[in-house]
Image (tube, rainbow, N blue to C red; front, side, top):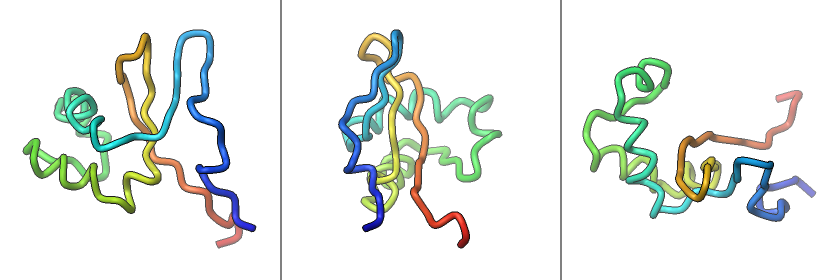
Length: 88
């Protein structure tokens, strides 16, 4: 049986932060920092238009691997996590 992100009891919480699976509703919140030049230069794929970004963000194959980070219920970051065979 291959592990999956669905095997985790979400959200995961620390003293200050919460990490949870992203939803389509998180597109606007993540766009607020993803659109910044200082962030975009570190991204392998950067969209310059909100609707282009939303379309990529909401793609089901990407969304199922995307987690968002919250501070006081405000989205402050996101990341992509994929569980794969280490020998691949």
